[in-house]
Image (cartoon, rainbow, N blue to C red; front, side, top):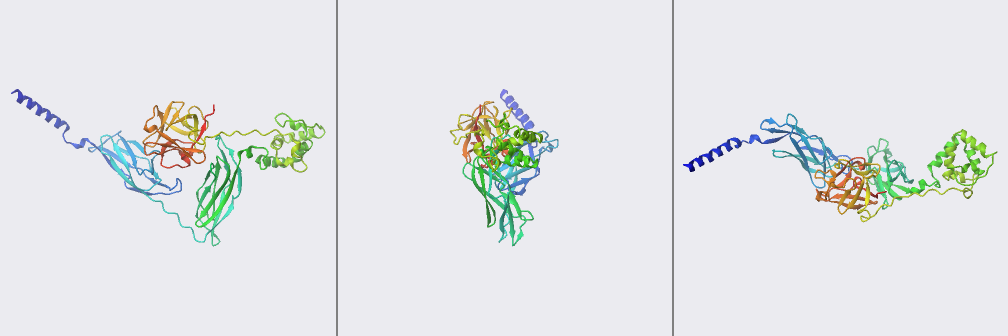
Length: 496
C-alpha cells in the first residue's frame, strides 16, 4: 500500500514537470535576419594598400515565439581570414540592443588587406547564433598605361632641405616642394594617368610621399611628402607604365638650419628683403663697416666696438625710426652672407658669439637599450601614447610626456608607471591599460623596425600589431596584421 502511494506520487511529480517545461520550443528566442545579408563589395582606393571594401548595415530581429524581444544585447562578430582586417564601426566586434520591435542594427562596416567570402556571426542570450555571409571582391587591376607615353619632370628635382621642428613634436622634418611630372602621348596630355611614386632612402631615414596620384586634364600630377629621423640623399622614382623619371632629394643636417652661419638661411633672405623695402640696407652697412659699438649692446653681440657719434648714432636713429632694429639684429646675429660681401666687412673682423649647440636626444638602437627603463612611446606623427584616467582607454594624442605617458618595457609586457598596470590586447582588437598582472593577453613583444623605430606585437588573438590610428592623434588599437607607418613607434628615454 505504502509502496503504491510512493509510486503514484512520483508519477504525479513527473506529470507536473512535463506540464510546466514540456517540449514547447516557442519559449526559445530566435534571430531573424531582416537586411544586409549576402552583400558584395569590391576593394577600392589606394589607402590602405590594396583598398577598402565598404558594406552597409546589418539588421536583425529577435523573436520569442511571435513576440519581439526588447532590450536584448546582440553580439556581432566578424569572421574573416587571419591576415584580413574587418571593422564594424571602429572595432572588429559590435554590441547592439534591440528596440521595442526587437530590431538591432550594426553601423556600416569595412574590410581591407584581403578578399574572399566572409561572414558576420550574430549571437544573443538564449538564441541560436546566425551567420550572415558577405563577399569581398578583389580590387580591379589598374588601367594599363598608354603605349608610347612619355613622362617628364616639371619641377621639384634636386631639392635640398634641412630638418626643422614643427609644432609641439620633437621630431624634426624636412618638407619638400611638390614633385611635379607631366605625362604626354603623341604630344597630347594624358588625363587620369595613374602615377606611382616610390622612395628609396638610406638606413635610418624615414621617407613619406604620396604613393599613387592621378594626372589632371593637362597631364600634370604632383606628389608631396617629407623625410625625417636622419639626413642623407633620397631618390623618388615616378613611373607610368615603362616611362620613369627620378627625383633626387637631399636632407641636410638640422644644425645647418639652426646655425646662423648657413648661407641659405631663410631668415637672412627675409631680413635683406625687408631692409631693401624700407631703403635702409645701406644704413645697416654703415653700422657694420664702421664697427659701431652700438651693435654690441645687451642681447646683441659681445665685444668692444668703436664709438663714432657722427656716423653711428644717426644710423642707429634712422633704423629705430623705421622700426628696423630687430631686422638689423637678425642680419648681424645670424652671420648673414651679405655682411661678408665686398664693401661690407670681412668675417675675421667681427667678434661673433658661438651659436648654441643643439642637443639631440640619443635614441636606443636595440631592444636591450629600452628594456626596464622609464620611456616614452611616440607615434609616427610625434604624439605620445597615454593610458587615460579610466585605465581602459589608450590613446596616442599627447604633446608632452608626463606620468600617464611613461612606460617600462619588461619582458613581453608594457607597464604604465602612473597607474601601475599593464597594456592588454582584447579579443575585439581594442587595447586597454587596466591589467594588474601579466597573462596571455598582456604579452606584447617589441620588434625593431627600420629608422630606429619599433613595433609592438600581441602574442594572443592572432598576434596582431598595435596601431596608432591616423598615425597619431587618435586612439590605439591592437588589430593590425601587418606593420606599416601607423604601426611603427619611437621609444625615447624619459627625461626627468
